[in-house]
Length: 468
Image (spheres, helix red, strand yellow):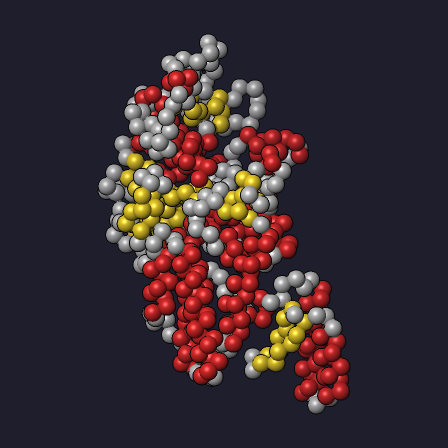
């Protein structure tokens, strides 16, 4: 397996720190608002990575944090006159619901900042004891970036002269402008937490380093805390740079052996940003498009590339997914009797094991769909071919997380719940009429069903309908 290391800027063969085991940590959401497409892209990328690692035979321990301590959370709670937990619980639940609609599996560990304060206190104290942090007169504690000779080696940034200056304005006690907060003292009655350093709140960069040490780090890992650290490209600096510095200086080991960063999400060519007024919430997209369609579309571009979200491309992507479901419809009713390897499975996994080469993987799937359809057209009811095709399609479901729906229900997108219930009643009445050989009533009910702009299919497994 090969991974593009976004710090070393090369594709590297993946060798786990411990045989057959992988530790993976990904930066999760700050839960003060609904999840947007940027959250979805990152979560999908690392959901896919976790699936591929499992398929390669690794046991994966996957952690993704929940940031539930943040100034934005506090402000929203104050604006709405509610407690902070009410805000964080609401948006954590909404995040989980949105991710579930996209077929994203929950990580093995999902630590919250509020539940990880002890680990943060320990890291701050280690940094103070080792001379890599200092406390200023108001009680704030900063990381001393000048004390870390390897600071900026992660992002490969070069500080300008203003950033290198030993002291900034007289009113600021920071030693260097690049120094970042580990602990922010709170003395005015604002939201705070008790700590050995007084009341306050932790710095944002601190929580991920502390959580990794608490939940994932194991002994004898060749100088690294974990195998893979992931997140969006926007986190490389300063967040991941500062994480790496904290861990390195407090523990004497590096935070991760491999770094992976997914690209930005743009909407019609513009970087997604609330300041631009074009943030696209997942909940809004789900009102129009099925979650699996969104999953397929968001995964269709290589994870390192910037993703340009537009409806024209989404609809084209859906047509590609439709082909998979049309084949599944032709094979409907056959069970998967074998989980044996096939040439298709090996090719598909090989493509994804090459730095998640999704373009190649999808082309392999397209080729399989075309080949099976052509063979079925000429060979007719070829049971062994159908069983192998179902076996391969089950593997697509497992590895890529799409193609999992009943193929008839998949084509029901765009029909409201009330109409679906009415169609269910009409089909049941029609089936009863057919059993009683009341063909006049059966034909009348069929015509009424078709008037809803759907077509019906009578199969040995039952009667199904789909949108025309």
